[in-house]
Image 1 (cartoon, rainbow over the protein chains, first blue to last red):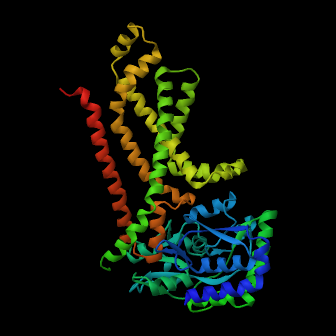
Image 2 (cartoon, one colour):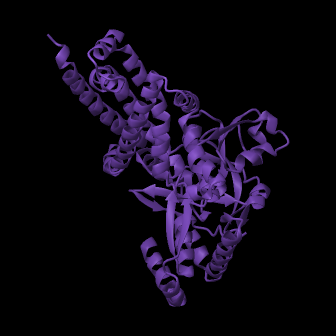
Image 3 (cartoon, rainbow over the protein chains, first blue to last red):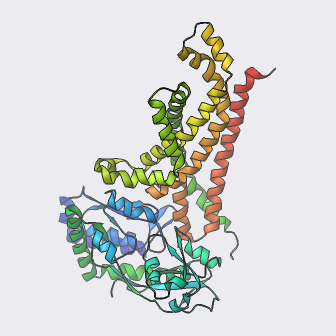
Length: 253
Length: 224
């Protein structure tokens, strides 16, 4: 099914941008991702997959350029972007004030919320307001740590920052909860053999986009990718990819 | 929780093993370069060559005194900020550079110890029959020092193989990076990490066996 869709997308975009492909086929968009964020970017049987991969493939096809993926630990991705080793990061990067000062973002292509997740059967925590006095795991370099620190009672929360595997440590009961985006949290619970459940409603809207270096070249590429995202949104391609992975359209506010 | 998923592990092993060559290549390249650098520094330290000796001391102090991960981040992400030409350095090269500099600092000291440990009277004897200092080093001291240094140097090589697992922070998908990504796709953490642990362990055991046979060979002259 997924392959059929991909072929259809490929054929459709070939029809529209055949000329563009002929013009600058030697250009390459270098995209960084962690490869460790199910179902956005992950590896199965040595093959990089996920929502981000499908979106960036579609963007590159629309622009008629090649796309090349580089995977690194999340904490290394912004370093790779800053030092010019990649052009952008497709890893559900949330737009924040600090990041906006430093990077040129495209339009958001995912709208989501921050979600508290607990071990199944943990009735103590029914939402973000119950995190007082609890140990909460977040991913290093993600914006969820900051979201938690902005809560009025943040000094009562024991925030633990992880490089990876926060789902596993919550399932093991080593921490009381973790905070992640609602979409991938639901997906993890649905598809993976870990005893976890959502605790309450999402507590903050987050908008995710692609960051580029804020220089002339970076902004130029940003504008082109932005245009491609516009077209993919209008053609319903973004929505289709989202339906494929999530059964709902997370690309609309 | 769930029972061990043996089928998943069996399927994962060949995939992970395909990343082993890169891990070993980085460690081997790092080891060869570190050995050369360490020998040079050890000789500088033993002969107390003015100027170079102080420089070597500073080098050893820094690279032994800071974590390897910090050094890797410095080379890969930090330096290109100062000199944009350094962006050309890829992750594999940066890892080999980091391993070389970091481990050469340790190895220089253990090689120096091995050289100093060779009885002073041997040097005196060699000099008395008219060998130059260089000849004495090459023909008398270093061959004996090698035998003393081999076990500790092998130890560093083993450590270096495992240290390559930091390369994924520089975007190099080596053995550990491949495992982390596969674990993220399956959420079978235990299966994935026990698989990779077995691979590292197997490689190190093989090396330990090599070390034993190498030591036996080097010790031949001393057996009666």
